[in-house]
Length: 330
Image (cartoon, rainbow, N blue to C red; front, top):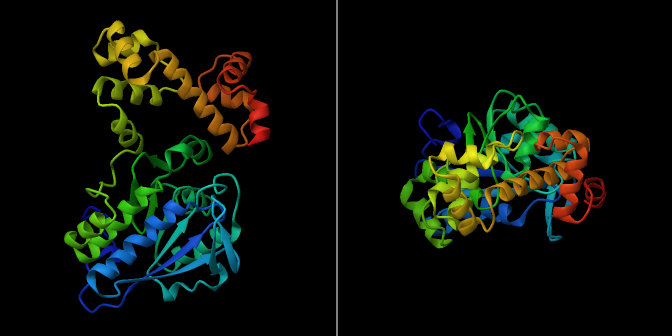
């Protein structure tokens, strides 16, 4: 967190200070990996320091078990019992469902917490909940890349970034999964110094703590593709889904010949640039079919297809079902 971003919740904490109190709201369909990435760094800080630096309590929409997206349930208190005066920060953990289903109790709690002046964080699709609660208008935020297209369609007034996590005043958003680990390590580093955060990262075999602005897709692509021309080509194709660029134009923009681009694409991506771009557009269409209520025709246009028939034919060829059938099956 840069100096301009550091708010009271991230200020250095003195030896002997009371534990930093976390309220964690589990939204049905939450991801266990994201949940663990929030809890485990706090537990690690307590264990490695030999002091109770952090304490936490779990809440759900209602009292009882909250089911994760893997079917494993976690017991939590009812969110109605969450009193902001007892906590320093609230973290909303979500994943499946939150992009398309409303959770009024969670949205109301988010507004209540924000009015009380607490730091408020959202993990993965938790950003949808904050946006629906009216807390992200005009702000910067992030969401897991798999839901980015749906988020942009739904919330045009929010500045969506591709970062691992984003701090905008007292509101934090995180892409989820291991990005939540980086967000928590950054918070611990602000509270108790870089050395403790590094020790925790080492305990989880996490290596270096990734910076907030490290792009999600660049991280994923970089792990598999070491060629910078191909990396730039993929980034350009991802940015031009609505208005695809031709392989010839893409090659010119990258400063290579079309033949060289075709050769590199086949070597590192296993197909031509045109085919890879088509796959990106179809994958985006599938996400939008499953995550939004836009019509099939609207989705076809948003994904760069000139006609509904062309879209339906390409979709069936890629996924062996029609767009409407796929939406019904989701």
